[in-house]
Length: 117
Length: 302
Image (cartoon, rainbow over all chains, first blue to last red):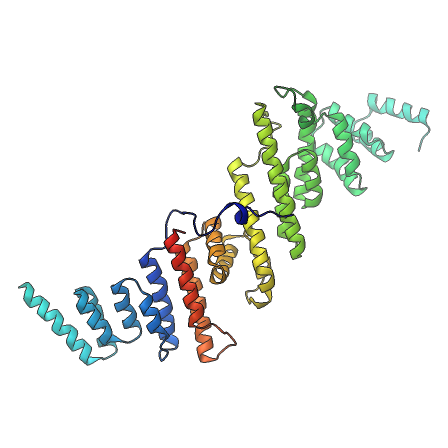
């Protein structure tokens, strides 16, 4: 009779390996899925559920961008005050010709630039 | 068959004036296997002669069990004499073992793995016998027989470990010429774990094979190449995260690459369901379950 040491001796979900799945790794997986869904079934609302699963706000901004929700991405990026994200958003807005969001991004970047002077 | 007197005379002249070929040919022709073996071993003939004349003859005429018994009789096997002694000093073993190993090498080259196992077990070379069982496991197509091979391989590996412990307890160290140690103890343990995991994997996969569209997937095992292991991990982790993680650990796969591929597969199935392009029935709930399972792994440090 085959006796399995896995089942007998080693409790699952309790062993420790060298590294654990970090929030950024988990987010990377969810973003992968969101990108795939956004490409093929953009009209589906399932991406919203997935965005809610993202742990890091920056990942949420990226996810909104992937889903074409630039306004939501802008609001979150502004909240974070992340200029790099705003610049990425501006590029995306220009690419998809979303003039409103592009103008908002430019305005934000200019105001930040003025603050710095 | 010559009469006894004539035979004695023949042997007398062969031993005095014959060469190896004439002597061995005569002994084997007249079913004097032990005499043939003694002729080779006593005269310290090469292993090639032993294999070319005796092993091939025995293989052809199904006389390998007799050959083993004769070799056992000629050379006292290390293991039979070892216990109760403090050191290995048996000169007979030194003499017969290289011939046995040459026979094993020959069977291995011929891919006569089932015969090889019987010789390895005869030599109490259990770890190598376990490895040979894995080779048989790899070659066979029948799932039930594969399971049987795993079971037998596991038994041999465990026996091998037990034997090593017994030898270590007695402080016996084999000389390099006769040592059959092929794997370090930790490697044997790795094999044992992999066998357990493969067994569990089988239990999981056998009812699912008909639903998997990857060509040749039935033959993918943890003893196969990295591509096979990666494919196994990618499939399994979607259905059983624990088992999938174990495969990743065992095969030392890149976890993120497996997870990324798996999630992409899940995403494709979901798209197929949404667009009715296939009879896939993956829904958001299924994806939620998968992500939750990953989260559990993350929290518990897997």
